[in-house]
Amino acid sequence: MKALIISADRFEDTELLVPYYRLREDGVDVDIAALARGPITGKRGYEVTANLGVEEVRPQDYDALVLPGGQAPAALRDNRGVQEIVRYFFEAGKPVAAICHGPQILISAGVLKGRTATCYRSVAGELKAAGAYYKDAEVVVDGNLVTSRQPSDLPVFLRETMKQLRAARAAASAAANFDLAL
Amino acid sequence: MKALIISADRFEDTELLVPYYRLREDGVDVDIAALARGPITGKRGYEVTANLGVEEVRPQDYDALVLPGGQAPAALRDNRGVQEIVRYFFEAGKPVAAICHGPQILISAGVLKGRTATCYRSVAGELKAAGAYYKDAEVVVDGNLVTSRQPSDLPVFLRETMKQLRAARAAASAAANFDLAL
Image 1: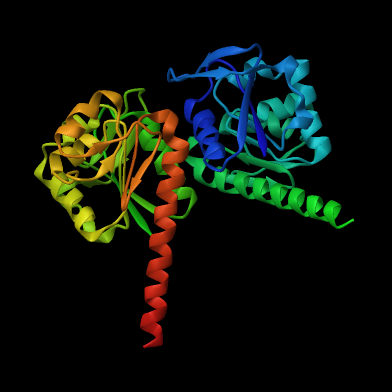
Image 2 (image 1 turned 90 degrees about the vertical axis):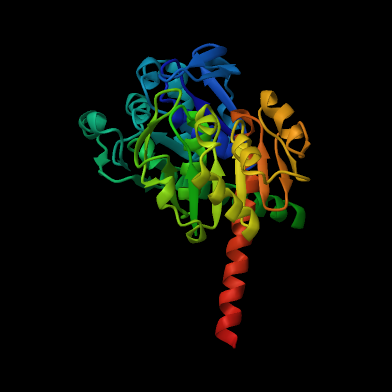
């Protein structure tokens, strides 16, 4: 399994690092993409290395997309490459997990119309304006989409995200067994 | 299941927060103890609330102990209450997970003689002086004891810590079934 995190400078440190470590605990390979390859720095000063620039991402290589919050989504949301990656995951029905300001990227990619989601309190207005049903809950799961509000929601955010990944893994393994049986 | 984290000001933020969120993802209740009740602040500025002072801790209420690093262990290691809690977990054979400078507390509690463990590089000397076998590995498991070196080890540190908790849970459930069968 392979997951993609897209972020930028001034990410909310725990919202990137906690999912990053959690996915790797489970044996998932994680790539981090930013506007360009290289180091990005969180609001609290943690530095991670983006091993890919957004333009280099082949979204079909990934089983899940994670969008941390902080001020990073504001820098990413109008990028065409970012928007195309997001739309690929929604069209393919693959898990997308966005927390805090992360859903701003989904709003700009135009994928939230008719979907139920949550986000950081101050983002709720534009989420509704984008045609989504806003719910003030620690986690909202709507099909492939997992959203949460803030760092304190990380335990349930990750519980649901890992559940989606396990389901995707089970489906992939069932499909492989079916191929073998043919 | 219930876990105890002991820390103090200037903890390494991820080494406290990542295990804290991970345990809660799994439905584990987590108490945080510090020298006194109240807020403690990490090196990067994250604040968590210690809901217990060390003197209030009843160690027999917990299934596991987590000792994050940073500069917190230096402030905790000479505290008699902290040392007694640590010795209880070792005598009871319950999981103890310590990372980075966390093992300094184990050294001062006198529980490492003859045990195999790792720690932050600069702590290795005093770990050996305390009679432990030092291994430079991302995680070292020796019976109930799980140790790691630094934040980048968190994925394997938590993989092994959660494995210990699952084993403890299975043992508790088997014991409960045995009681029912009598």
